[in-house]
Length: 247
Image (cartoon, rainbow, N blue to C red):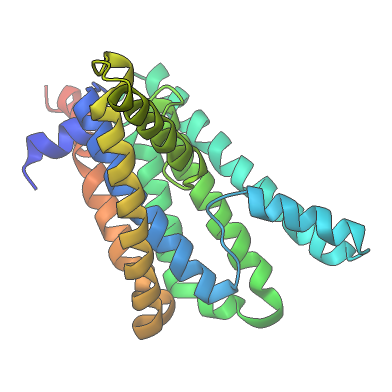
């Protein structure tokens, strides 16, 4: 990938086009981690609705251990999102180019850790893997949430599928009543949301196949992709710190 493309993709100066492109990459990664992670720990970790519902069921039937495990997963997701907010604010305070790249670097590190050590959490210690993956997904979801102004999410599809349905309904109504399509329908956003859904699915297939053939190591290529996406803003900041010393 060209340096200027990577710099624009994850750097501090944002454009709507860069936001859309980054969201597509991260939707693919989220789908892969979610599906591969499910095969590893038998639990989806990228969306909290199912986990909270399972917590309620477990409380109702008196299974305190499973209810606590669900709480730990949700809390880890929350901490991941909080970590992104802290990193972005810290980088912004110091005028760094890597305010959005830093959380991606942390996510890449966590995926590498999962790939290299995940096997040690199998069996009774699987909760540790669930917590790590939920933290990672919270971290990632907060990145795109912040750069898009809370318009786009990449780790779960409920909102995106709802928005696509609403827009298609508006289009069908306009067509049936021979009304002109208005800016309200926003084909650009419809295309973006559809592409995110498709890429999440494709990532899920890749993650499931990757886990089947390579086990926990399936996350290593995903981590390399994130490192590549985040590299240029971090390099720019490092160069900026070194320049005064050369003078």
